[in-house]
Each structure stands twice: as C-alpha cells, then as structure tokens.
Length: 358
Image 1 (cartoon, one colour):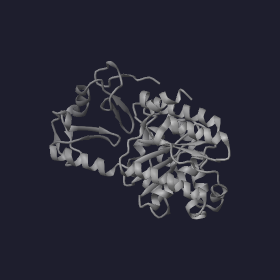
Image 2 (cartoon, one colour):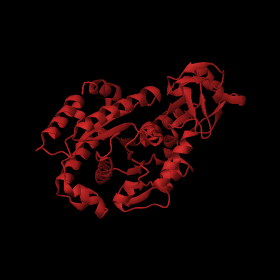
Image 3 (cartoon, helix red, strand yellow):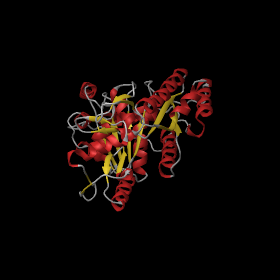
Image 4 (cartoon, rainbow, N blue to C red):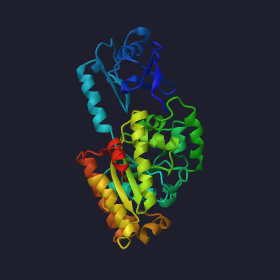
C-alpha cells in the first residue's frame, strides 16, 4: 500500500497525511495536496459552497467552515451552523467495535454475539453486523434475512432497511456466501477500503455497532477496520494464538499508517481458558503483561457456550447461570466502562512494539 497521490486540482504529486486531503464521493475519490486546492474544488465553477445546515450558498473563506471526519465533508456558512454540525456529529456517532483476529477458532462470533447482546441488555441500541461470508451470526441466532450486508456494500441499500430486529435493542445485518462476491466489487473501487464506512452512514442512530470479522485480512476486513473506531481481540489460550495476536496488532498498525485510519485496541479477551492447564495460565499472563488493563478477564472453556448456537440463543438466554454467561458479563462490563466513561484504548502502534518481544 502506498500513500503517494496526485492532486485532483493541480495535478501535483504528494503524500497523503491528513483527512482533509481525501474526499470520498459516491462514484469518485478525489485528493488534494493543500487546503487551497481542497477549497478550490469545493467552490467549483460558482466560487461558493452549500451550507450543510441551512443550505445557503456562501463564499468559502475560512478553514473552520469545512468539517471533515468519518461522517464525510460538511460545510458551515456561520459559526452557529458550525456548532450545529459539531453537536450533530458528537451526538450521532456510535461506538464501532470490530471483533477481529487473523486466527480462526478464537471465539470471534461467540464474542461478537454475546457482547452485542450484553450491551443491548444494558440499554444500548445495538447493531450487530456479520462481515464473514460464512454467515455464522445469523445461523447462531436463527435468522436469515432476505437482504444482507452484500446489498448494503454493493447495491447501496440503506442499512436500516437491511437490519433485522432480533431482540430488544438488538438488530443484526446478516451475511451469506454472496458476500464473497463483494470482494470483486470492492477491488474495482478507488476508495475500496472505505466503502463500508460510506454505506453505513444511515446507521448513526445506534449507540454501538459490533462487527464480526472473518479470520483473514480481506478487503471486507479492511473495510470493517476502516469503519471501526476500536477493536476487541479474542485470543484462545494456546501458543499459536500469541502468534496470531502479534499479526493482528501489526495489521491494526498498518491500517493506521497506510490507510490513515487510527484504530485502537478496546480489549483483549482470553478465550477457552482452563486454569488446570499450564499453557492457558502462561498465555493469559503474557497477555496481561503486554496489554495491561486492556487484557480482560478470561472466558472459561464452557460447554454451554458451544450449545447456545444450536438453540439459536445467546449465552444469557440459554444458560444465564453458567460460567460462560458470567464471564461474558464481565467482558460486557469492561466494554461498557470503555464506552461510557471514555477510557483511552491502547494505540495499535504501541501494542505492536510491545508484542514484538513475545
């Protein structure tokens, strides 16, 4: 991946460093070497921009009149309109959590489902998105939608029309094998790493969005990571899982450095933990040493967690008094604390440096 770009206005080559240098439209992505070129593009032939609040056309004169973030580019003609844009962005932005690990068999889908269900039980309005073509989220909850994430990504269907209510405060967007075909669509897009972020703009009414990623570094996962603001990493208690988590934090560092999207580690969840096994204890201690407070309480190996998908239920519904339910309640508490209290996650670059010693 390279950050060398050509300015869409003056044709000058430059290195992409700042968010304002990128304008992702529905059909084309434009690049600007300076704010002067960006403003020249915004003014266009008429020499003016349209206010995103009052729709008034005005001459673009000041830097504060342009707001660029994950919600897109917005323009304000006056300070009051600028304040409304700031308030709207702050109020509508949901917490976007990707459940991600390169290694398979670490409990990603189990973690995604039960964390989403736990947040919903806590009163948050939650959207669970299956970004894995295997479609295990829908299978685990007994839901098969007529439309799926494929329709959101490729056809531009509003995510609110695709989301299926499955529990109180909990909606899901399912996936199936057709999602694999979306890779071809994404590969042909100029802004191929950020299509999901564009398409999910209609989901801002949720308090939290949980994305269940596949065990790979595909374009689908790159889209999920460029949409997420934080990552939850399930790590099974075996040696190869430590290798996988090293690859995972390197990937997050690469997303930050090359795709210019900072992703933070919300937490690391040791899964399939059995205190009787020396290796499980050693893996957990290593994760605590490397990640500190971000290493959450381990989820113990529990047969009820394996049985719950067959009953099409979350662990809180299937076996609310089990060890699995107790352990995921602790994970949910940690996620809630980070979400509501503004806890500062660990930058991926810092975690990557620490994991090199493993």
